[in-house]
Length: 218
Image (cartoon, rainbow, N blue to C red):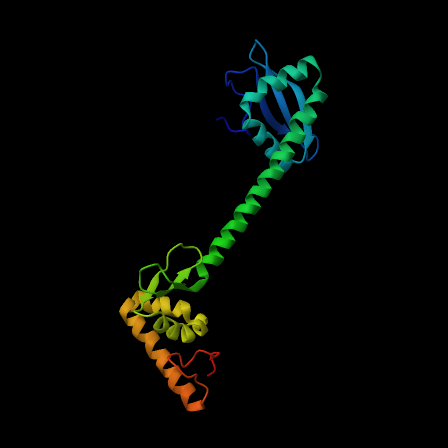
């Protein structure tokens, strides 16, 4: 495609958009008609700021299927008829593009937020052993899972692990460096240390889950 800032060129149609310097600091966006002798004359012109002109002419260049329609309308009905057909349509397109870019930025920020977010999930698959896992919000699969023989064993660990959310990124780094088994050992050691500390303070619960009513107290 020819550059919109270049002069008129032959692109196989008698009409072509063009932008040139207008009066003062203005620019003139035109729809030019090629004459048989190879010269060009404007059939429609709109003056605006250089920035708006570049945007407007760029949009016109993206609509080559409309050039001949616009040209015929200008010649048969009048150039003023093209104002809503071109200017308003271009502004509407620009507004839609701004909204699309805003939406894309918002979606990108949300993906970044979800990528940073790590959540603890519990899994109780039918006819399979219960497990827990850590999963990023931007992914559909846990990056770490720990499986247990009994549900109460899993819930015993959860009673401690649920209060360790500020450390979940640390756990992922530890996983990447040392592997899944070592992370399991780290988690179990942390749970047991917390159980011993809670027992010394007399705040443990009876039964298989000493930290059932624990709230992460130091």
